[in-house]
Amino acid sequence: MHISTDDQPRPLTTCWLYWVAVSTGDQAGVMRVLGLNRHSTVTFAEAAAVIDEDSHAGSEDNPDGLARVYVSPEVDGWTLVVGPWCDPCDGERSDELLRLCTELSARYGRAQAYYFGERGDGSAWLVAERGTVLRRYCVTGQAEDTLLTLGEPLRLERSRREHLGLSPIRDEGARDDKPGDEWTAEDDWEWEAFCLAPEIAAELGVSPLALTADTRVRGTGVLALTPHAQSSIPTQLPT
Image (cartoon, rainbow, N blue to C red; front, side, top):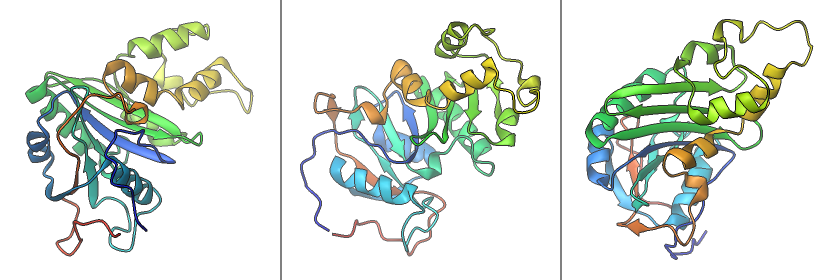
């Protein structure tokens, strides 16, 4: 399949989107911290195709989607790293993402990781500033979500809960303790929080879903191999 070489910024979206956002244009430095290597230049159009393929169980060369990520050029002062490898609420990778975002924030001031399932599959956000994790919250309908909660609710979380008539800070101990199948105000919150990651990302920095032709860009995006990758995985996109 031939992909357009028009390198205008465009929304990067797919059914299950995972990304890291770092408040810097130092693409090479971000890649070094994350341990990414063997990269090749890609356009926004090519990146969109890769992101969509990898979120849908990857390809023959990358069956779990964890072997490669897209690293954006500087977009409105931020660098985005996009791919399933960036999942902040994955049971096997959550600790590693926490460490990496902490390290990135210590170096660049701010670093965040997100998950968004656009078909009602939930959201997650991890926010670190100057070497400290301010917040990690996962709402994906999994029992393990409560175990990953860290820090105090963000401003947007508080305002949405207050709008629903709820306490701005949720009692995580009672998160799964509701009477039978009765719908409660906390269910309203979970339903709203399922879609909240893109809004939080846009409020705190840059969201890949909100990129447009007017987004300020400096540099060129690259496709990079993660530490998970095997040496046999190609760095070039198929055409």
